[in-house]
Length: 288
Image (cartoon, rainbow, N blue to C red; front, side):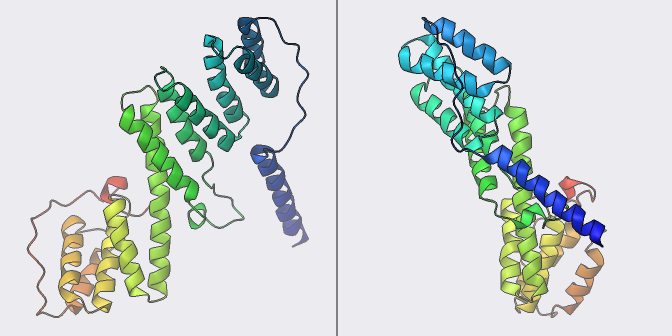
């Protein structure tokens, strides 16, 4: 027992130090640097410090280039590299602001696509992670996830063929999956508490906003809630769709039993026939 308590305390201590190292953005001692005469020389010094992962020193050189040689091409490159320094130090909010400033100052620059992509990554990196001693990450606040979705979609809408577009799409799907997990969690919570209207709203939200994530479960919970709310025609429609798409799925038997409970007088609106979907993987909408 004492050993488990010790390990738990040790884990909390390690987590605190890790978070503090990754998220701190307070004042730090500025490195002593010896500036050069020209923009190029200072930029080269900054770039060497950047390549050596001495990001604080690199920022000093790049800021000097920006302030002393604002009309130089090296000042433009310094703007972007300052953002890259913040990103490399995991100061993601500062990095996002710096990338946004670069886009405002240089809206036609060839690196605008890269800067927009990086803004999306800044918020993606701030999405809560799972820890073995904490509640699942999808139960936590997802504001960073929402912001990552906005920024990644904005980047992809403007630069769908950019070299980083494939990675952005992958990360965007992960963000949407996380939000779908959050909605599913709330749906299950409402169902367990017999809050059928709440469960219905969340089931419909899953189906409308995150199709393909948890369709089978959402359709069953929707039908179940509609039966409880005496909305039998809509319940019959939902259970019919569920059995049409997932005739041998996890909820198929429960759906057939639920259908038998719906009054015979209920009539679902006619729907076009749908071919059964595969049961495995994300495409089927089956829960993991």
